[in-house]
Length: 145
Image (cartoon, rainbow, N blue to C red):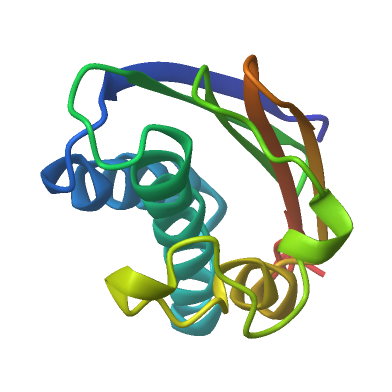
């Protein structure tokens, strides 16, 4: 059975909306009957991506918008988190474990590492002054086999 579905949402860049993004994504992918581990992995990655958009993209200001696009094609979940914030100067450097652009805020610098650990693939596109787009993919185990 070829299955496709998609949901798009946007919300203002306040920390309280990080949990909203997790719930929306978890509810959406529940139609695939993921394991608890798969569901937790996706929720954790979404949390990190949305937090990065709010904290780094918009520097914690609540005047920006975060966009989330979740899609399912067969058992492949694709999640895109996008902001129109300040962008990333050096993506390679930003993806290094322990690197943070906000050391004064006591950030761990592990956001991208967490995303890469819990998802099958993570790609980051960013332009300084334009914003950042993170695309994460995870193949959910098909229990019908």
